[in-house]
Length: 171
Image (cartoon, rainbow, N blue to C red; front, side):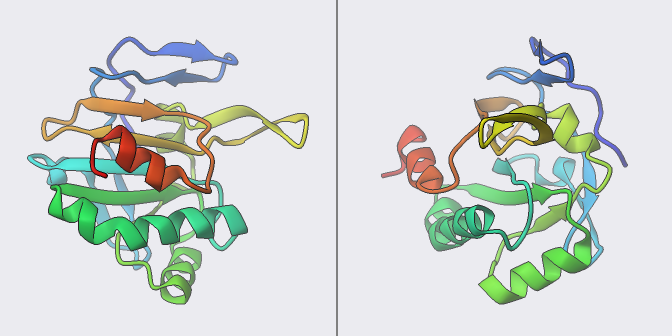
């Protein structure tokens, strides 16, 4: 199932995607995980969820970020958070990434980029001084009712999880 259009105060960015803000309802989705099994955001209602979007499995920055989430997962879970990583990679590539890096949270495949777009995590960005269209590394914290508590766009891969933990008052 593709993402539903966001309902909220999002504004258009580069004429392509809408940014979401705290208080907006998070677009619902169902995406296949690394094993091809459907994972629905709605199934996680009642708990806080961190959804992070990254460009490509097994690249240096994405590996660093995923391993940082892996290494913080016990602490995040103890604070009541579930973690979902989303990229446009095929499930088979996600499975290899998960196995190689020992990742213990769901990696979801958004091959058609509909969920990335619904969250404003796909569009124009600067890469090595050039404007390109692609995945905008972004992280969202959702409350137990599916509302956005925190929306962070164009985050850095290195140090992001530590900053997110500070922003959430978990350190």
